[in-house]
Image (cartoon, rainbow, N blue to C red):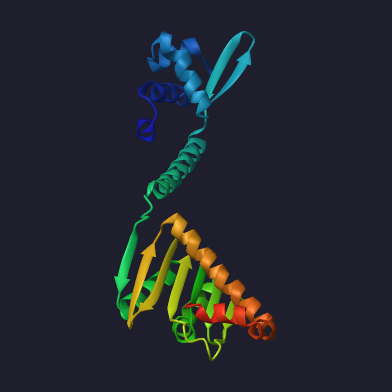
Length: 252
């Protein structure tokens, strides 16, 4: 049975010889009881000691050994087994290759489906930017994620009512003719989707590429910062024709 848990035959024989007697044994007696060669006995005893399977004591000039009790051994092996399983899970997760390719996608409904799938899979954080109707369509899911403890940040063009505090709202200027519809979703700082309208058709890219995820996260913060600055200093900015001209040229 011990060999099934990764112990060698000699280790199993030594442990068996110790557990079947009700007193500590010295190395010479263990050799006789276990059948392990004398030349190997101290090496085997050392390994069992390192694994926490036996106890050692010195009496006079003799080194004595006794086995860990059976019930204690069972608990130890169970704990070791569970720890090994957890390490295996972590190793599998770490070894899973990240898909840093950039995937393209067309058609509005397909893009919406992928966006919702990303939101569903988010476990730590969500950054989402879009127009009010897009955000409203996913608001229940976003609020569920927020209430589950995720960090949720929203940048919305138009107005939405929500319990989520991290909302930046841009109310477009009536002269802002260049503003186009777009969507950004970034989950767990690991995967993102960016969609925009080209002509009259929606097109999107999706990727786990670190540099692109970082770029679009900065892009999100750029929009939030620009929105907050514009709202706070709108009267001053709109009186400056040069700044106003630049702002009104922004497409997103």
